[in-house]
Length: 237
Image (cartoon, rainbow, N blue to C red; front, side, top):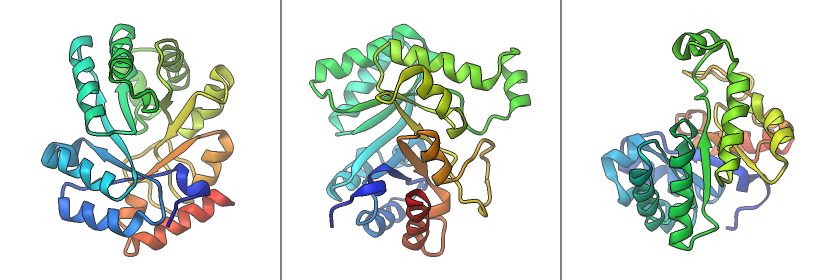
């Protein structure tokens, strides 16, 4: 069954280390959503096999490995990710201009211009006090997100990963064509787990988010398909 509407904007995070569990979730949820995210835990254990799992379900693959290394290494990593048929991948904007440009060049060389490359700004588990202590700065996380977003746009990335609380400011700086992928999504009555800067699906879209990443609220539910439907209903509202 084709995935349409808001379902095309929902990315289910396969936050598990078990291949069989990932396969179960993909089979169960692929009729309802268009994207699955494969992160470092699942990929480190199972590698390309889990990427094939997603692609064989006729879903889009968000390969979330957050590349952050010297430019030559990142160039090679992006080339390898594109060979795995990733439809979206992540890089840490903190890697700097040369690294991000090397990633963009790898995509250009691969002749796969439709693959989305998004930069990670400030991880959503960091609270205000921890951020200041860690980075020894008085610049707010919000201002840092905006600065890293401008770096991402300047170097040729398609968008950024950022908390929905920063989306409006990002869109004001970059315009509607620069995409924002938003994690930390929870329904109003859900536990926050280890996320600090969280919003509801509805509010994230209202703020201008283009894609929402949801993991535990769906995959840890007794009824993942039902939980997914609740997220989609909240998005539609």
